[in-house]
Image (cartoon, rainbow, N blue to C red; front, top):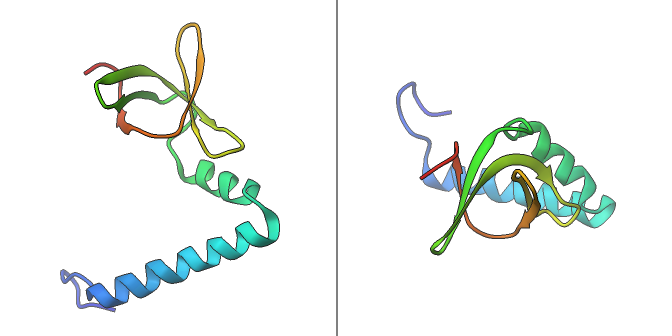
Length: 95
């Protein structure tokens, strides 16, 4: 554990990060994606949070509607539900 006010060593962070990835890979292999999706949703902003998604020059604004079974972000707009697999996610609506 680093002293108060000091950043942890990069190798310790890397080892911890890689160990957690390996844990989740085990979950995926044993139980599929559903438990990963549930854990992600439990830690995510609440459903209904305003989001703006930018992918290249395309910008879409709406509210967070969850994750698809395939792990795509679901964005709800006034008239459509989009499954988005890539893009920059910004909290709030507008640009």
